[in-house]
Image (cartoon, rainbow, N blue to C red; front, side, top):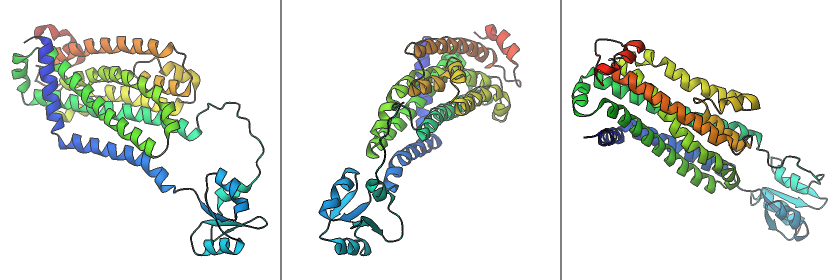
Length: 353
């Protein structure tokens, strides 16, 4: 059995185990429900356009404003429609707006005369969207890499703790164990994100947010390759961290550097997303580029060549971390006499290679 076949065998085993894990399945369902609720419920809860009763002469401007217009015979019929609860408001002679207990702002705005407005930056993103998009990109990468990375570390440590790793190493190459776990984690994470993306797109279409979807599409397209390479980089670190110990209880202590490598870029992108200089730097740093560069593309701040350069830097960094993580993984995997130091794992790699 060569390394490629062994890697596929390990990856298939990891995926089968995870797909039978109720925690993973319920977690995926939870994220899908959040995605559906976040895109479908706001338009539904906001209700439809206000309904207003008017005579035929006043119906035109209100229809143009998108209101639900009901034409009545006269002012008395319009007032009665409001009292009966058939409409939210009525426009009678004067003109005057009638309502029961709350000012119908949409009707008032439709009847008001506003000065002409010229937008100097018509392509600018709304402030709320400008805040939510960086948070969503950063949160998805943060929670996914943290969750699946921790699972990789726990899997490695569990195999050491139960000594089953000695049987596995006798059957497949050590590097195939690491590669299989990384491949399985990346596929599971990408599959989970794909499901969430499908539900989100459907929810945005139901909620009539097609304009936002058009703006997000290029950024989402770039987010996929950046996410995959960023995940591989972090997964190699998680696997190496799990191989340094032989007890599940020690994972939190040994994984602190990896946790910082995930958390610091997350908060940096969230709090510095309106700082052009900082975001330019973050979009080229391997640990933050998976979220910073797609965000700059969404805002229109990145030149056409920048994502290619950033992706190339991330590719080189992911390869380097994968090689380094594999060396540490090989040098510590069969050491079950306590926690292994990085120096020892790096130097002892050849003894089991």
